[in-house]
Length: 167
Image (spheres, rainbow, N blue to C red):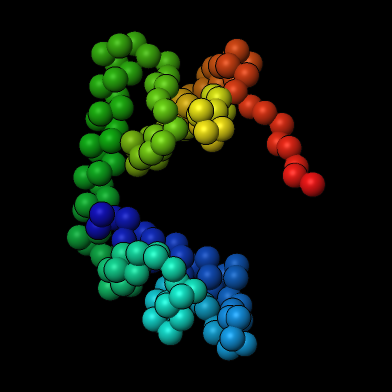
């Protein structure tokens, strides 16, 4: 969680300051400048109905971090990366795998932390017609193999439907 909080603050601030940096007008006509995570937190405090049930506590915890050059953050990040690589490498080596296939829900954590490529493929729909997918991940520099496997799986599953538009 420590790594997530540091990176969330850094990423959201960078995004807001370089890509967005705009004013937000509420339904009551008030305008708020949103250029940082702290601005979002303040907006949520001043306009609780607009904030909905979003996890304000998580935003506050992230805002209290002190950057991505913090030694504790860097040590925790390195520990997480080593653990993810060790776990993924164990699977690839023990079972001589080219790729691992998993349900897409929360599938990206290990490969993302390890720095491994991942691709998600539409796999079908639930009984409620909600789409779901499967994700493939491979070792570093296995992008070509993953794309070939993903193409074969997508072709055989035929889990994608063209969207329909309601009148």
